Amino acid sequence: MIKAAVFDAKPYDRPSFEHFGGLHDIQFRFFETKLGEDTVELARGADAVCVFVNDTVNAAVIERLHEFGVKLIALRSAGYNNVDVRAAFGKIHVVHVPAYSPYAIAEHAMALLLTSVRRVHKAYNRTREFNFSLNGLTGFDLHGKTVGVIGTGRIGRIFIDICNGFGMKVIAYDQYPAKDSGIEYVTKEEVFAQSDIISLHCPLTDETRHMINADAIGIMKKGVVIINTSRGGLVDTEALLEGIKARKVGAACLDVYEEEADIFFEDRSGHILNDELLSRLISMPNVIVTSHQAFLTEEALNNIAETTVNNILSYFSNDGICDNELCYRCGKVEECKKARKERCF
Ligand code: NAI
Image (cartoon, rainbow, N blue to C red; front, side):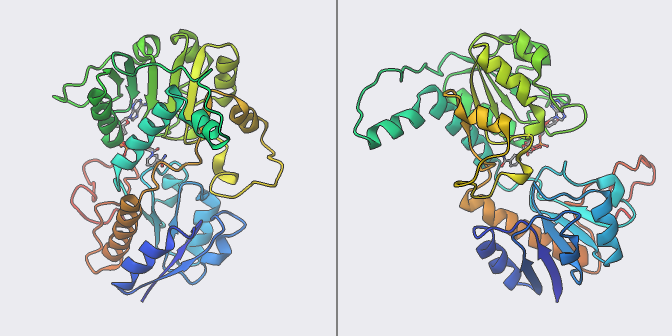
């Protein structure tokens, strides 16, 4: 029996994990709390820990997990900026779910965009109060508008397909452009300068942190709509607020927020929100915030649970090869074990 401690587990996570875990010899223990230095003790006795986007898996946490004999960190997300993979190298293997439903995220990005530009969120509130006035609800057509997509991986490309379906002109920037994709690549600055709508679909790295900052906003078109369903740290929130206050940014659609870790996924209604920036953002009429919800579809939850169970089985099985093991970029290209389909260490 493999024992796995699931952190930041919510009621909607459990059924699919219990179902797929039950098909194999994996016993999941669910903890509502997030993994971090204060809670790592809960992982004692587990063979694997299963974590999500706002768990903190830094060097100190990894050290304790290693002490407890935990062999595997199984991320139930694609992004892994919250795991110090370098600190884990040589101690604990890390696996992730590279793709569970890129459609879920791309469709949510479009849902946010349509809600924002057609003022659906406002209309919904009005008609519930029998207010059938249309004043202030004028939107604009997406057809013919230029959308700039940053990051043309799995999610970015689906979002591009959706935008093409709407008759939008798509331009894109990617550090590693996809060959023969038919996508019109331009520089990052050209995306900023030419787009009516900008959607972020690249990972959060040292290089991409605060990619949307005051300088970037400075060269954007007046009225630009910024969509972020990727990671909060891509956007300098203070600069975004300034851009909104200056009427430069026409609207922001945010599924992620750089300081979301202690806020999102929890019911904070009835509490004073101790986050000035987020409070001010939410108070803006042209900002829509969802709390890291883009992944939340039935299809995605099932795929996440199934892939995580397969990742765990694959790691603990005799051959131990797991395609979804994260690369530590140890730099030993010649001897790369992952390339030879072996365990990294
Ligand atoms: P992917 O790995 O398929 O694509 C990422 C793309 O970004 C790649 O084409 C890569 O070349 C590009 N990229 C890397 N560094 C870049 C840079 N410095 N500048 C521009 N482009 C760069 O990843 P996928 O599956 O499309 O996911 C994208 C992001 O979406 C993830 O990193 C994750 O942060 C986020 N995400 C958000 C979810 C949510 O619920 N809101 C759920 C799943 C993912």
